[in-house]
Length: 203
Image: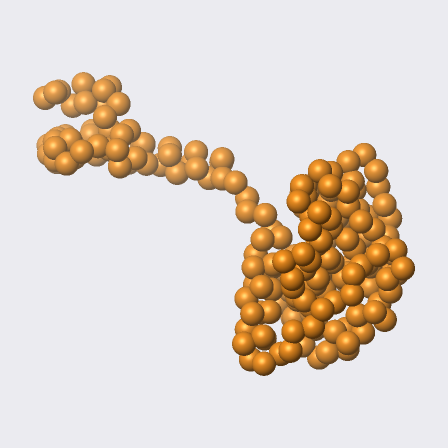
């Protein structure tokens, strides 16, 4: 291919921008682009088009992943620093805030000033269950649990939990367990963040 238009029409430049061409093809394209500004212009346009496509089709990360990853790192650091391992009580319909008082009264179990959407502090962890204090500013996105039950005890603020086609309006002291295999999400209905004890228990 010695004609620059033929090179453009071949689709080889698309592969070049994607990094799918071999060394020989790269050398040829770079030689042609040095001789023909139309080639370099086409390469630039392909790059811009691919960038726009990537931005338009970007997948937003689950906002729950980051706060729980940070909470796990924090919990591990606390244990390494000498915090004794303690087992949080099992959440059920009879649970109340006083059952978790030893954690709720701790000065480090507070909402940070730079809180964004969701913040979590792990209270205890076993292979069967993880228990955390969680603050939700506005919402927690839809998710489904197939291997664990998710349980909520509302401590402060109010929220509505949507489970499939049902809506549960929760106030401080209310308890709710999410059934397995059920789509659900949380919408905070109070002006202040909704503070909950959240427990995930292996099914």
